[in-house]
Length: 527
Figure: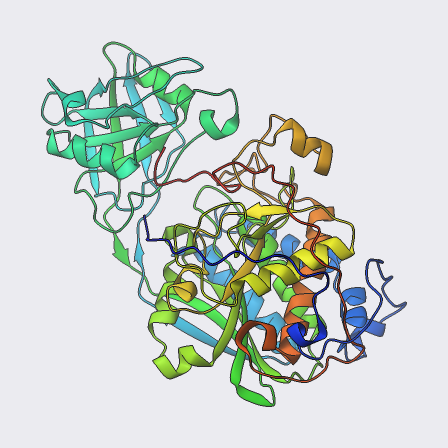
């Protein structure tokens, strides 16, 4: 884990003061604004919060989501990095941005592509299973006996399969190690298996709880490239049970990696202050298993809708929007982008806002927990991040929407920015974690089901988004991007100018305190 350094906690202010937001003056809040009739949004400058939020809509974002779905349908069912669906997604976003008058550039970066993997059971039953390679897996095509590693099957199990080298005592050299999720990291399990002489690994879900998060297909990360030299693939709990039968033989296949350069999209609207850059981003790629419409078509589409509606705005600060590539392969696009910046260029970035999964079908509203009121962050939280959290929380309060904390973990494209001391924040509506009864009372939906039951699956399609969540979050993003385009004084001390029409927001109502230690997202590198 990354080292953590807690920020000092501070009491919430009675209001977000004019000085804190630097020039954001009084304006009505808490009411939804109707969009102007006809084509008014196309013909005006949306340079106030009221004008912009009138025009930014879930319907506008859905048009982009439908286009991304059509791209996936035409390209093997996905938009994954290294595959044609991602290239088509890039072309679509670039065309829309250029039509809206943004300065668009392509930031190309090296990428190691690993193609679709395979998992096939040969005996005592014949079956082909949906699977995927763990990040950091070796390549290989292996047919061998399956060796069950210290399994505990059934609900309520406390599996520690593969966590100790002694779990592999007696494994025949070259066997396929069948390992159950639980108790330690995927990397520890795979490294132990390779050291014991296994020729390949299948890691299947734990099955300790009756929900998709613990029953469905699990494909995670070993924590970096080339962690082991043997193929490691994932499986669901049901598949693992089938593979655990006596006399089981199987085939695992992870193809050899290829070098396929990938692309980030960078769109910029120059401001009067070129040395104070407001950045916002969302990853554009999907996993290979599906079209990635909530993860992360939702963030990408909302950001594109906002870019179109801000086309005529003349900001004080330079606004830079990013659509990242290869996030699903380990945050590669954003990391390569930040690594390629000089220190002077990094210093120009006032803040970074991240939007990854903002329309989960069984959503709760969450804000990255910059003040660590709910979670001690496993990373160092840059100064200024608390103020970004406050702005989003005050927005939710102003529109009467309850919200909760999402762990400030660096588990998305803001990681590279915070590691370089750049203040960050963002929104999240949940992944594979199960909604609790208390959360159902607050946000509706279905208790006992994941926030997104189609997370990283083929069913993450156009029917896998919640329009209410998309609409509320799109307005929150629009407010933040526009407000910071005029002034970032509350975040980094750089004085801007007053936003036309002004803005005042109430004090944050406070998080609901319903999110457990996972912060709304399972820790895919471990138990």
